[in-house]
Length: 83
Image (cartoon, rainbow, N blue to C red; front, side, top):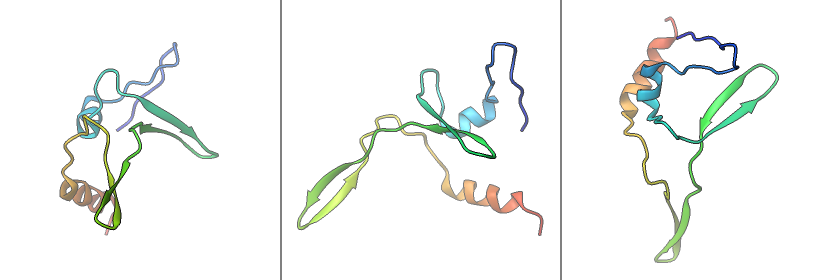
């Protein structure tokens, strides 16, 4: 998918991408810049460590995580590259 930057410097994230990533109005995003790219990364709270028996287990603290079909994401990634 391709998008452009408008005169105000805004980028429109296509609806299909927003739906797939679970992005809703008000979702916090981090903007990461390196030498070759600009990335938007959904900001989520850090997990909480909880003791279960003698082990520490990381439990998510985010309330509204998107429903992600992992198998579909893997298949999309596989189909992205020519064979």
